[in-house]
Length: 253
Length: 257
Image (cartoon, rainbow over all chains, first blue to last red; front, side, top):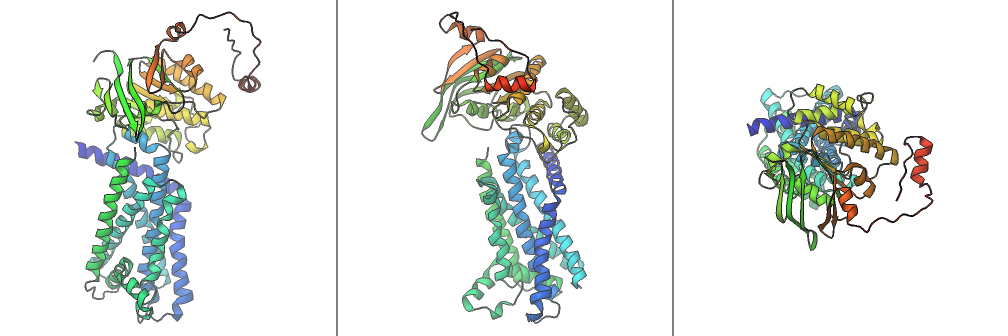
């Protein structure tokens, strides 16, 4: 009975937040536009000069572009949470017979849905730009799973500043380093040409293993143990961020 | 259940080293409008937060409709509605959508009908399909209060309902609160304005230094003060009187003291 109520409450609040997204088309456009600009820049400006050792540079950049899209997309989750906490909507819901965890989960699910749409749009544009994949259904499902888990991890990370920030800027500032992370990874150039110190960082940060795993899956190449490392990173970040987010959530009243 | 809607006994709360509530006692009966009057920082909002299950007390007993706020918080949340110090409406949604959202969360069978009725009652029918962030201060507050009435909870908390509103909007809210009195719901209202408590409340409690220092009807409280002397004074209109006279929103009001 309580579980049914929790699902119902989450559904109602999810519908409310999706309405927010549909009514602010600027956020939809911005989340697509910024990663798209990077993709255009890398494919049509820098791409010709970058030797990746593979034929199709659109295929090469797409995973990194998708991660940038997710990293900037979750900052809107932080923003929406911040607005709800500061605007008193959270207190209003808490003082009502509404399942408490539903209030937060609605935001998390909204983030997953919104980012899924952004990713789908970017993949369609990439197809127009020459992205080709002969990956089978299972590889696509595996790639979708990794992207979903990565979105979930960054969403829980976004929840922390969303609940605790003192200003709007503070709520979304956390995403800048995340957006920057793919640039110091294998997302756009092979790591082999980087100086040793940068290379060590690039090869051991989460984006590289996630990008490599996605790239291998979409190119039907052997994924090796990259996929395991990628999943471990995503799960680890998600679990740690979830723990801190829940702690922050208990303090909001 | 007897006719006591809210009962508070020996309520204590400290924030770090500051003791805000030092043993607060009062009772609110069903169908009564009860005003908690106190200066800024006196602890009015703290009491409201404890009663609406948002904050835990350090000591004492607080009950709403016979349910203990800390042990039976779910039951309490079904019996109350909170209108916080700042209007909590969803600006992106329309007035109608805001009301329907609350109705659906409260599990009301006909959310659409409930929303329509409240919109009409609060004079928001015309603005119903406009986004709430286009509303004036008074309209926002009216929508805010309307949202609190969804599902007619027996106890309503209004935390400083007119703070930050212009005089016209304040009168709008006063009219709204006065109509609530007929519905039989208990209303606990906090305010820092003596005039507001006078206008709206059946009984008034004055919160000062962490305790209730006086409680009673307006007449009872007046008796605590020295008998009135008759004086003739020429009362200059306040800027508020002038504003209201010019905008023609308020009939002349005479105070003889």
